[in-house]
Amino acid sequence: MTSTLFIGAIRNLSSVSRSDNPNFDEANKEFQLARESFVQNRKARMHNDEELECEKCTLAMPKGFHVHHKDGDHENNQESNFSIRCPFCHLCEHIGWVGKNRMGVIIFAPDISQENLNTLLLTTYCLELALSKTTDNTSEYDTLEQITLQARSIVRAFEHTKTKVLRNYQTNCPADFADTFLAMSEDEYQQREKNTFYGLRLFFHPDGFQKEIEMFSNSIFQINDARKSNPLHPAEWLSRATIFKNQKKGIER
Image 1 (cartoon, rainbow, N blue to C red):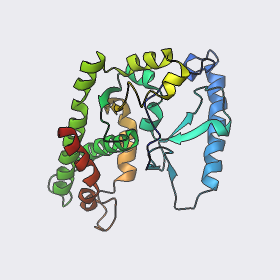
Image 2 (cartoon, rainbow, N blue to C red):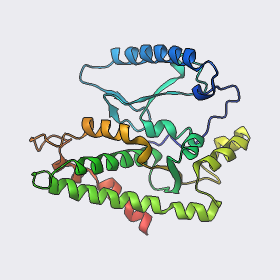
Image 3 (tube, rainbow, N blue to C red):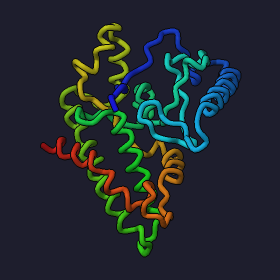
Image 4 (cartoon, rainbow, N blue to C red):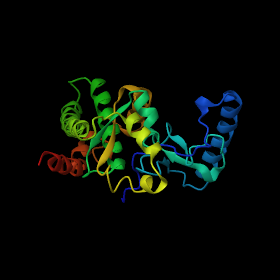
């Protein structure tokens, strides 16, 4: 999958966020109606066994998805302005909000795409929650503990690179980078990933996403499924971690 997601901020000067709208209740009602119509139209074009997918990381989501306004204007509720996103991929384009609410930190990880990092983080946080709910005398516990510890180790290696960002930019707060992005010319902004800000990624903390993590943990990981061939069973998770193990080795070189 070619990466199409890089940290950003809404630069549309005419855009209006719902939180800043003095007519919030009316605007939110209009958005919810447009959102429901958009979601139903999207589902009508899908097969019965398909779930909505994040348009960036392709995570399948039975629920808990966000609907992103592409131009940042929350008054523009045309379907062409909507995009299905997982919570992490959505907020990568609102890093000012993430920083002000202390929901994440900027790291340096050029060897992993933002989409894959988001998937890794969400998976790890779901694993940690699943492990906390699994008793150690069940048949799944040992496998679940093993993959959780491995995932946690990889995630911590990525998070540690925030010190490199702090050293090179004198900050690793997403809000500071958002302010810089807003001050750029359009040409500078479009080239930000290739130049001064190459390799930067947004690392989300779990604290601000507990509801979403529990939702995805319950729907994505079928811990009690006895069929070992089920791709969502813990017995299959270890074989799916190779890409992240290799990327961790790249960090530590």
